[in-house]
Amino acid sequence: MKRIVLALLLLVMSGCDSAAQNQPQTNQPLIETGQQLAAPKQALPFSFEVKPETFELFVESGGSRERASEPLPARRVEQLQKSEQEVSWSYPDDKLQVRIRQAADHLQITLTSTGTESFSWPLVKAPAYMLPLGEGKWIPAGDKVWQSFLREESLTFSESFSMRFFALNHEKYAIFYMVDNMFNNTLDFAVDPEISLRFTHEFPTINHDKSYSFRLYVTQNDPVQIAGLYKHVIQQQGEFATLAQKAAANPNVEKLYGAPHFYLWNKTFLSEDDVQWDALKKAAWRRLYGLARAAFGWQQGGRAGGHRATAGNPAAGLHRAVPAQGDSGRPQLRAALPRLLPSAVVRPRRRSKSESADPKRREAA
Image (cartoon, rainbow, N blue to C red; front, side, top):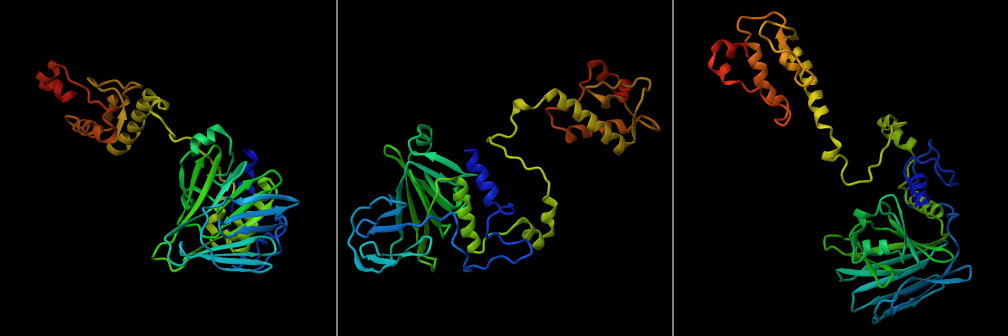
């Protein structure tokens, strides 16, 4: 788990200092979308086979054949066309067109709606998954804790995934799906008996683009290789910038250099039991004493009939630097206390019956 977190943080986050061969230099402009880079060193060569009737997809690399997508219920297929590097067809009943093209290092898989509102593909099963949930999770399909957590779980892709990919860990290699469109996607998990996931895309009527697509790569079963592959793809799409490049565009970024960074791995940062209420009350009174001195000109002293300051109530000994007849400022301060501090902390001093009855004592109080 630590390797996954470190890999995704160090190799993918903007500003990372990587030794990757194709990382742009800090004094160079960002890579433009569509600019061609050399094939990523993380990508392994592979071949593929697809069954249009069920959209079952296989890949083969290094003599090992794995299923990249489970079969869907059989559908009627039309307009089937095949060539050495490409295959395409349509599902007339689903109002969907499919095109798979093999590039130098990946498969480009595009699904286009001709009328359907949503479509679910791929449906994947693997011994384990590497998902960018938060900072990255490695999820064994047979793990009982993860099964309990993900059973019948539905996650919005743009909300729950911090990066646009998911990876399937097989015995010899990993199958890496790069999602080209971040939005209108949902991942539904099932446990039957092990964890599987289904990717569903919706086609909103207001969107002119009626397609969603993936780049499928084969790479090593290593979080560092997977993170490096993702980094290469976003470089190629012009979405990667170093911290120095960001600072060139916004000098305020330089203020972040050396700043501490903390992660809080709990829902509650501060609970009621974490507060030392007695100490907080005393600290609040001390703070109030300082504010009162500045605002009302009070100083701590001992006038005949005055109240001695204590640690729990330092305001009790406040007096004017130059006492006035009747000491009219003190009632003003006491009246302000409940507004300055919460009622749970500040409680006005209760007078005895003798004080309430005696006007002179009432004035001194």
